[in-house]
Every structure is written in structure tokens, then in C-alpha cells.
Image (cartoon, rainbow, N blue to C red; front, side, top):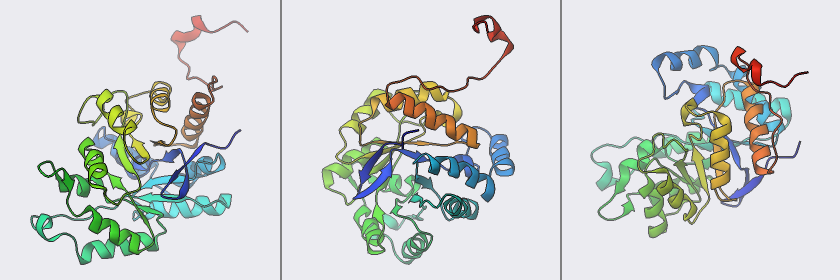
Length: 285
């Protein structure tokens, strides 16, 4: 099997597929019961390592999420030990905001959080969209204090980026020359969680000055991988990335195989699921 395609972000080579972590940490975007299922059945360092190992062996060596969660961080360490391969971490910590933040910016608490991110081994550090999107100023078309946060991140030897659910963030970052090397953006054919229509988000992404790390390609499980991955890989630029979340090693392998088939313009030999109703369309042995 060919190694997974790569791109450059801030001078670092990363895999174009990024391993998401919502399915590791209990964020289903579906129901509380589904969250509980993830927490009891998946959120375990060894189970997470089993999944990460599949990705690493296929050259998908970039992961995104909240590495301050022990199960995720420990799973990364275990997968690295098993494979002898280094994981590139895109960390997305939350930085608290309050009514004074627009005027005063960030202080000691942000410094403490970034110190911890560095200690845990993050290569990239992007304040979570819960922080970033609270700083969007549509009147001035700027992102308040983004360069202050980026300076803190660079001071610790990490690479800053922009995590956002708001398409304006990318536009304003480009217009103002914000010190970020990439953007995290929602992107899926369903429009799930996206604030404007899919074709508008596509235009924002394809006109961005930096590479874009897209998230939620399968709309938190509401889109099947075949449809979802064909859409994103066929509509993004060669420098852009797709973040996928899986709950089992087999799901990880399916996403890798499907994606490589799409990118290489061939049919991926992926085993299909079976139901009794399909017996009449199966070829005879």
C-alpha cells in the first residue's frame, strides 16, 4: 500500500489525512447515550492506541484534539512505542474568555495552558474555536488578540493556527495578515454545523491563503464514508487536509483504503456491509 499523501503546514510535513479525536473522547454530536457509549467502550488508552497504530502504519501520522485528556495522550504514546513512528500533534486547547478579554487580552492562564501543551509534545497549537470565535469582530473585520495568542505559542516553539467554526475567521485572518499557518474549518456535503451553504464554505476554503484542515467530513456519522470522503477529497485543494474520526481499527483502515482509492482515481477494494435484502444483487459464485 502506498504511503498516504502529505502536505506542508508551517514548514512541517503532515499527512493530508488527520486523525480526529471526538470519537475517542465522548463527543458524538449525536445523543448523550452515544457519548456514554464512546466513554465506556472506546475511551481507553489501549483501544485508542489500537486505532492510532493502524493510521501510523499507513503513513497517517497527524492527529488533532485535546491532548490534555490522559486517555488520548497515553494512547498516542503507546501507539508511538508500538510502531516506532512519531505522531504529529495538532492540539486545540480551550483558552478561557470573559467580559474583560476584548479589552485586556490574555494573561497568566493562557501562558500556563500553552506551557502544558508544549510539555505534552504538541507541534501545532490552535486555541479551540470556543476561544477564537468569541474574538471575531465583524465591525472591524479582525480577530481580537489572535496575534497575542500566536506569539505565546511561537515563544514555546509550537506553530500557531486558527481553529474556527465561523467562515469569517479565515477571511479576516487573511485580510489582516494574522500570524497563523493554517485554519481548521468545518466542511461536509451535508452542511452539518456549517453557518452558510456548502458552496460558500468551499469558496472560502479554496481561496484561503494558507492550507486548510477540514473537520466533520462525515457529519459526526450522519454521512456514510463512501459519500463523505468522495465529496471532500474531490473538492479540496492538494494542500488541504481532511480530519476523520473512527471508533475501531477496522473503521480506520476503511477510511484509509477508501481515501487512497479516491485520491489515486481507482476503486478501493473495501468489503461492503451485508444485509439479507442485498442477496438478490450479489453475483452468483
